[in-house]
Length: 144
Image (tube, rainbow, N blue to C red; front, side):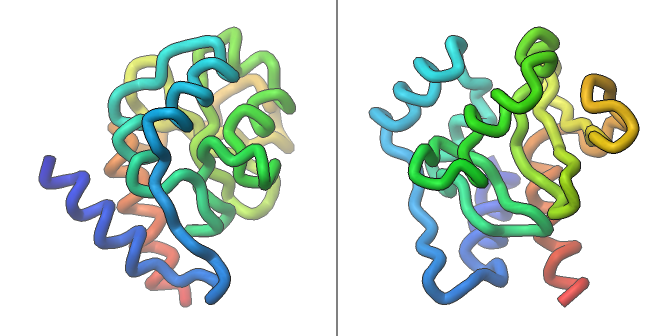
């Protein structure tokens, strides 16, 4: 999983607040997340969460099993948009402006512009989750 190695490097090298501690999810936390979502996690998302269980990274944060921080808690974000659950989408990150990237059922990542229509994809942005995380973290470094 060369992509996972690259994503790991980017996550731990990302610009973040000094108090932001990045931790991976434990097997128990992943099981609790699946319980809260009422579904099994896609393999790639589970792998990502073992590296970074949600954090203030990228333009608007990466989501995880974070009931301590609803801003970064995947199930809390999903509750805002019940139509996403019906479509099989899982929110994975925000853009910092109220829009979201969602993991689609086929493994691609799509962008939802909630100002236009919260229940429709604006576009498919990336072919897979690791490519998406790599892109937003590289873009965030370039923007700084």
